[in-house]
Image (cartoon, rainbow, N blue to C red):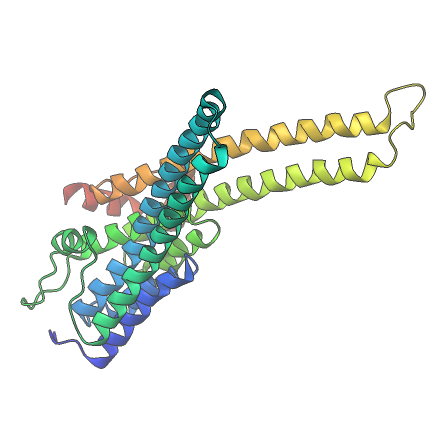
Length: 315
């Protein structure tokens, strides 16, 4: 094993880190880099897995941080709007400073998200062993990565990390499904554990995406139906309600149904985060219903699945 990063090692590391700039769409590149470089270069493998964690786990933290900022800002703005009329103060005078602060925080977080992978790519281009703040050193310990030792990364924990990042990527709308799909295609034959986790994650995220776009379709269907019939308001059928009123009722019904689905989707996201956490902790996690279906399908087509579970339990 060559401890000094070669040109190829550095290229894969740079590509993996820069793929974060695609804002979710580049999540497959670190997995490809890891799959290509594992058991060839610890340096490239670690940097690729670190970049994968930044895009998946880091994106989750970034989204949650934005939600906290939005909630706190909304509370402050509502308090200002309720406080200003009672004291006779100018609402605009109170709102402008808070809007400036919000602008700085929002775009500051966004700039920080993009700056870190750029710094990582530059460091790796010069062969430096870059570590992301907070995550980098923890991941190195998790994978048993030590540049000074001629030992490969811990294979079981590599697979667990990739599988967990597939679960966490559920927050990346549509593109997140590419992470477990790529892991399944490239490493499924080697690792039955990674294959099962990736397959059930692909199925689970497919269901969530169908729910999301289904809710959008239901809402738009009701909206366009209402708009199309608006010109017929007042035209009655057999003395019944006007078509315009019926279309309004239908639009409200479709909107409520879509809203109910949208409220359900965050619960799926939370379960996906929980699944990723469980996998990192060493569990062979199964999603309710979907996990059992995937396990039965694998057991039916690959009888060795049961042996794999027994080996995982013994380990």
